[in-house]
Length: 483
Ligand SMILES: Nc1ncnc2c1ncn2[C@@H]1O[C@H](COP(=O)(O)OP(=O)(O)OP(=O)(O)O)[C@@H](O)[C@H]1O
Ligand SMILES: [Mg+2]
Image 1 (cartoon, rainbow, N blue to C red):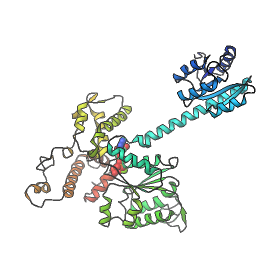
Image 2: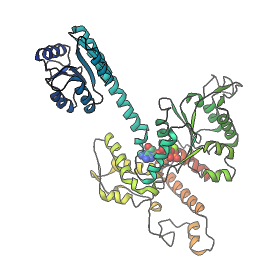
Image 3: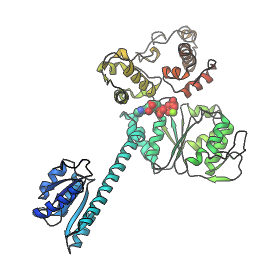
Image 4: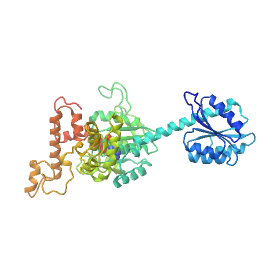
């Protein structure tokens, strides 16, 4: 029952009392305060109302027949665990009031009560209900955005990863996350933090490939005023910002030996020294580092310090490439489409054929490439139902039956590739991949010129990955290129 004269409902209260007069007076008083009030004469009836889920506060008498207030309280909290309950007790039944609180009631009032006292207790209970709802909402939203539920995909490989993640999240162990570009390493790092005891503290990401060596050092460790030209103020570093939380060191292999030794020292000592300062500061930081390289190979070829590798690799989390868990494609595609639909006035649907089409692809750009494909299709498709032709796939990424020639495998004929058919010692797989990458980048550069963000987008990699690849392949960005 609602009160039609109240413009803004202040909270929904259910009053339960088998004494008709008492119930009516209490309800009247609360309606006058602007609450939406319903009434029940028995516990059974009350449980029916509660099951509909539209009550914030239950105000119930203790002594009732056949179901008493304590039984109602217990059963009500089973139906609605977040319900606030105030028990109305007769003078002298303090033991029952205490028992009610023990069972989960928020408060009690002794009959006969003064109007002011009831008003005050009701208001306090409803404030608590609001706060609890806000906290629960926040926790759900936080978890959806950052926790494990942000990681879509129930393949065996993903389940193994999440089981391991949850186990290691409980500890403070340093974690090394390895996986190809676009597999979701950053999401994994965020989930690790969200499920750790540090989740209320900062998660601070830093991408080593995105900034220059000197800047990276002062970003991470901070600097003293005047430590170098341009250091006009003393600045805290990201290690300090992440104190009590998690520092995510992304693309950690893209750093120089000098930087690596400084990082190692910091991790060993648990202390940071700002650039240009001699005193060290203690920090309590959990480290998650990530790389999309074969880090063992980087160590073997002396590009990455072995001692730092051991220090970081206390626990390794490998994020599998999407082609090894194609069964995750439908759920991921749906997830990205739902997100695109939420931003668009024209919602789209995935056709079964389109999903089948996507599952023939090997996703060299991994989840990020699938995300881009879905977003593009949602933006550009003609019909509401997305069809295979709305997802143009790069030929070299098609998963085809074992082919005898590179051309049959969908690889464009290059000199390097062509050589494989005729020579006993062909090029290495790495050189073939490099060659294909070089040509794909050059072609995209030709199409989009100086707009590197679009180039990266088209290729299904992050701008950082593009920069890094261009550096490795000795490709200069066109003059005037912008990120
Ligand atoms: N399992 C997943 N569920 C939902 N979204 C995902 C998943 N994995 C990746 N993504 C999305 O794909 C994109 C790439 O993920 P992320 O940035 O974490 O990858 P990465 O491995 O760090 O890539 P890079 O090496 O290029 O930095 C992001 O937009 C991310 O939200
Ligand atoms: Mg990343």
